Length: 505
Picture (cartoon, rainbow, N blue to C red):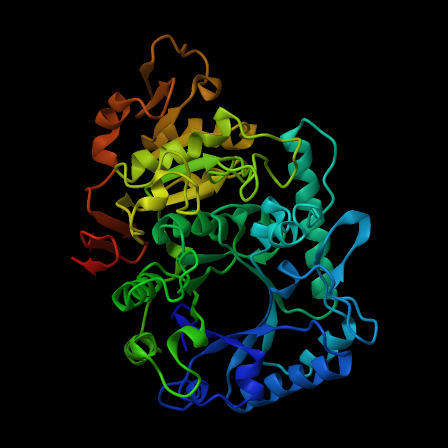
């Protein structure tokens, strides 16, 4: 298979293997075989011998089928006591923290199989920014456990630098234990860049409670900037409903992964597309996609994405939290001392502009407790080949942009210098608050336009100023459409009225 072709997979449970699921067998036959599996392990309550036996069964069965697999762990997100009957710990407790660990004995069993691709920490970003909220709620708000230790500081940068080091050390531990790759699986559209810089593969959820191409734009920027693959979980959950999306929405999200240059896409989960014995209508939809797109030639992938519209921001983990005192608390990077401020919200307002108002000004997820909760979920928003880069992006990352927004509390001198060069030499249009406006320009009115070289700077008091959209309208693309630009081709899609599907035009 060409490395640029899309690999298609399925999220399964270890019990699907040990129980020899008839439904799973449909996707391991020669004619309708998935390329990989994301296998969900639940080690709690079992001895190490029992867990090793399950791991070896998974490795053996999938090896015989020539299917690679990633070991997915999520049970630690919900269960505080992860000690096994024979004394092994599956969650680390040092310094009052709580995070998944993999005992070396278990890893040794997995590493026997060359088709074991690595370790996936399911919803790690969720646990970091919401401090293991499931355990917090289960304890009646008594157990408030961060994933990594946070410090007493008023400096967002200091906490961010510490988190980067903690993530890097954690990845090193996993790779020392034999994990070939480490990946996340993000509910919320944050920490992709912090994860990617430490070697964690960006893996965005589509459908779920976010708009799929917004999630893509953010994760794609992390993959481009930090030279990682890009994975995509097409998740059938929506809030508390499973399946919570239509079959046509599922198919269109899978197609989007193909067209958008994603390297690996998989559906969560087998339990949503079958009853264990036979496929339901969602399973038939997935099977149809597998037959059509498995091995289908694609002469590009995310590495040749050429975005036109960019958002540059310091990843402070804000997506829209702070609306409720319990679930999505008013804090950044999992540190209760760091509260959400106006500057943290700027990138959300920028997304509202580039989606022609189709994303919310309050947050980037339908999880936010607001009027958005009564809106019908839509997977796709109007966007013109968009991407998000972090505060340390450089000239090569940014050079294809025609329009960019500078957002948030901090952007490095390296990035600001690259942006200024692109304004002068490449005709870039930059939208910014006055703090990032270079000399000799002076912000005087609510909206100001300054020419520099072949480009221009637009300084605003607020990205919500309606005059802004008029100034940059030609760069935003057409409402009702998504464009994706690659070195090899330019793509355009019409979005259905309900936002569930896209169609190439």
